[in-house]
Amino acid sequence: MDRQQAELEARVEELETRVAFQEDTLAQLNEVIATQDGQIRAMVERLRELGDRFRDLTSELRGPGGEKPPHY
Image (tube, rainbow, N blue to C red; front, top):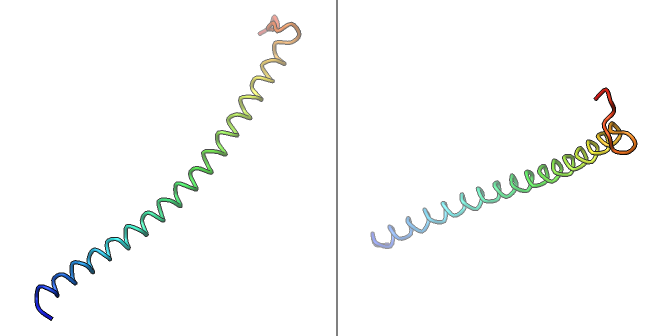
């Protein structure tokens, strides 16, 4: 095997190694993103529930007619 072919094979091997590491990194990042997406969706739903609950409590505090009680 001549020197030029050996250098070319070494370069190809280096590139294959880099691609393998990049594919692994992309898979890990994808997993993190998927996990964070689930967490964000859960937090958005919880925030929506809390907003609804807050509106309900605010309505209850205002009493009939939508006015604030005199001690408020």
